[in-house]
Image (cartoon, rainbow, N blue to C red; front, top):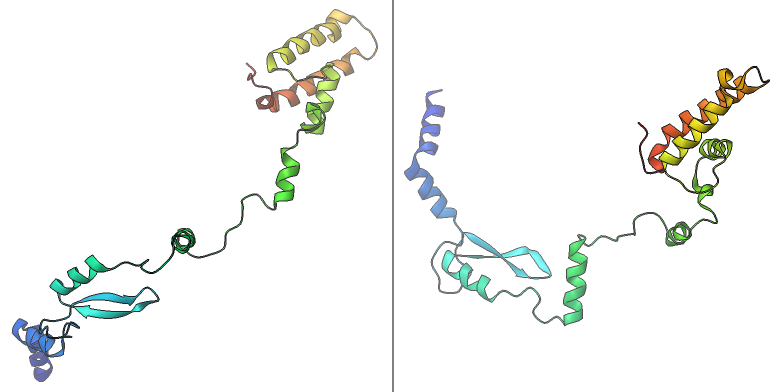
Length: 185
């Protein structure tokens, strides 16, 4: 145990550490330079994982002269920049294939064909066949409710069922009121 403690003390000793590191340190790759090569720099644009090791002075010189695109045409530089923007992976347009996108851009024959079936049925019950805002729907609902209300219509046969269907249709239209522009109160 005492021997192990002595080894740890030696490793922690700064003088020992510095002498060990200096023995195994790389030399600068510039011929004639005796400084330690502590800074790495890529050898070539095609060899980015292989490095030169330079001292601080020589790595600054190397970086000042480094040109990744040296010897490439303008078109090749542009192609490389575009490929690097997507990490050199293929890309596809959003939203599926282009044939579907073209079909979606064509307007429908009539504006009512875009609505859900229950909304279309509710609008037909109200007698509305064109685009409108929710205010017009509310006005039409009030007219129909007054006309078919059992107190106003008397004991006419079927008025109570008709009012129930009008109320159900109005509830559907309120549910989808965001399609009509003006929100219900």
